[in-house]
Image 1 (cartoon, rainbow, N blue to C red):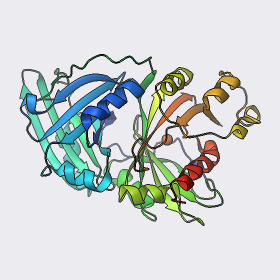
Image 2 (image 1 turned 90 degrees about the horizontal axis):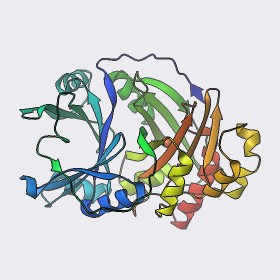
Image 3 (image 1 turned 90 degrees about the vertical axis):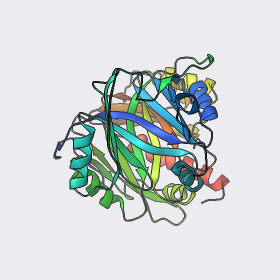
Length: 373
Ligand code: FE2
């Protein structure tokens, strides 16, 4: 049964202020950047590569309001990102956090059992001080800790401004990263909850299982951990057994293991966002017409016009604190793995549990078309 607690029961060993950025590994960053600019309205920010003295990879940093997405492509088969891409395909490699001291964060996490990836690298130059370290999380995903409060450069040492030709894109009103969801293998969700509680001092916020979310065929279990200040919210899913293959299993098969399932981006005007994204050709999960029958009875009075929500196929869910509006893209790669959620919160701190049933049915129709159900 569903469990929701807004009480803080964690231990803040060191403050995690917010998501700092996400870094993707992609086969062709130059083209991925074009897509995230033209479809989602990101803007060019910073770059490193051969032109800045980096020989083995390119990284493009895109910005939209308060969020940064980094796209990295290895330039040779020897680069570790090439092995990562061979296994997983394009996806998110790093969920980076903003901290006061990257070295303290690293040592603190490792002392409680985290596996280190990169020890602290600290740079002091004409732009100030910059520190970065990283640890391992689920699958081949890492968490970097970024210390840049006293850094005045554009992005990080070694990066220069990214100048690209203009692209016309209406404002997508996408503000910041709201939450990032991971898929792990069956039976491991609670191990990862423990990891985030023990290593980061996070608290468990929401839990739901197959009695809350299921269709005739497949189900999932989910748990959400969060930071003390609510800025970092990380749901973790595992498949639950059903008659047929669940969407989480399909992800795990095609990603060849655990990894990031979706990034939810907060909008301050979801009607504006979805109108722009649909005009830009973003492909969203289909919502059955019947979803809008009796919607007002389910969610009560809301500020938005129901006919507009129905036209744009935006989903609504309500809990004790308020309501939220959301919509999910189809997978953004040819492997049915990573996708993006657009969410607007009107008081609710939930994740749209009330929509999962309708969504599952939609996801299963897509799975069936791929022959994976
Ligand atoms: Fe979500």
